[in-house]
Length: 101
View 1: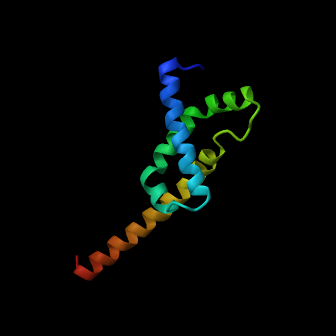
View 2: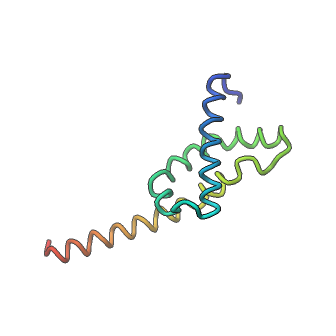
View 3: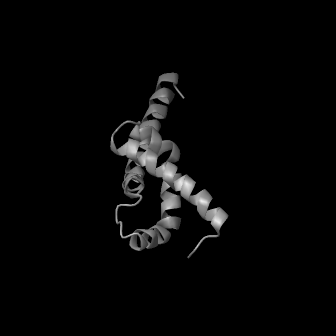
């Protein structure tokens, strides 16, 4: 489906920023765990809502690599978020044991 022009411009600005963050992620120039823990769920959700549109843009431009960094990054974030959640849970348990709660 086509977005109105103003929405398309805003959407493209946002997803281009996410793609640039994805490039930093791929090159390991940004902390992957922190990124997944803080923004991962948003990147995943936006990807799910946008993937059909992105497929159309890729086909229209004959470029299957458009937004590839974003796609790869969002594919890895669920695992990294789960890992972070386990680490936080362990930290809390140790703290409780130490305090005697």
